[in-house]
Amino acid sequence: DTEVTQTPKHLVMGMTNKKSLKCEQHMGHRAMYWYKQKAKKPPELMFVYSYEKLSINESVPSRFSPECPNSSLLNLHLHALQPEDSALYLCASSQVHSGGGVYNEQFFGPGTRLTVL
Amino acid sequence: GQNIDQPTEMTATEGAIVQINCTYQTSGFNGLFWYQQHAGEAPTFLSYNVLDGLEEKGRFSSFLSRSKGYSYLLLKELQMKDSASYLCAVKAAGNKLTFGGGTRVLVKP
Image (cartoon, rainbow over all chains, first blue to last red; front, side, top):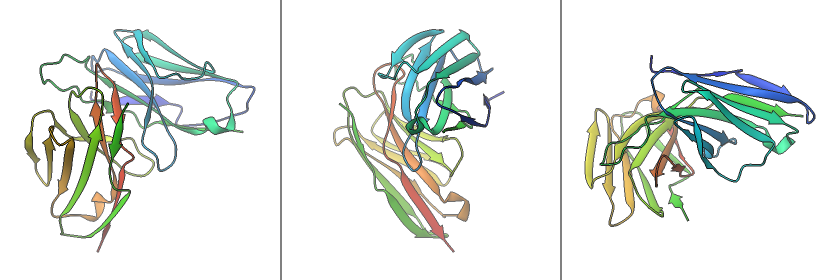
């Protein structure tokens, strides 16, 4: 299984709602990522989890709260979002970086298209 | 800081060759990736370079010069399905991947 799955595919929410995005992989990867991608822009890294622990937070506002309950699952909890947070949210996974020229390709999920009204 | 530059858009004819250049200035370097992204879809991995030189994979080749902070992706025998955005991404320390702005390639018949 070389697939990263994300649910839901589309999400529309109001600024006072609380919702969660879910991501799952069964490739045995111990690094998982959240990216945000606006239209016609590249993905921007938000969070990195390594061995289920948060290793990178790219100064993301606290209205985005990541969670990694186990090695296969990654969630992104959303609360009090702003309309400018509307974007495609991509999850990715990879082996943990091991150095020595061994590369760790990131596998991306199909994304959740989020619209904040 | 990280700075990764690539052209915004390129147009080429079906059957032709297109070369997409990427220049980078990053703090730390653990390899350079090329990804393909069709509109509305997830990025998919194309190639990886960490040592200088050319890596060939079928119709796609990628080149790296670390001393020049330069890479290119070469697409040969272009097909209509190759119309997509091509993302250059540099891996700095650990697992962090930073993407360039992407190059939209339009293949015309």
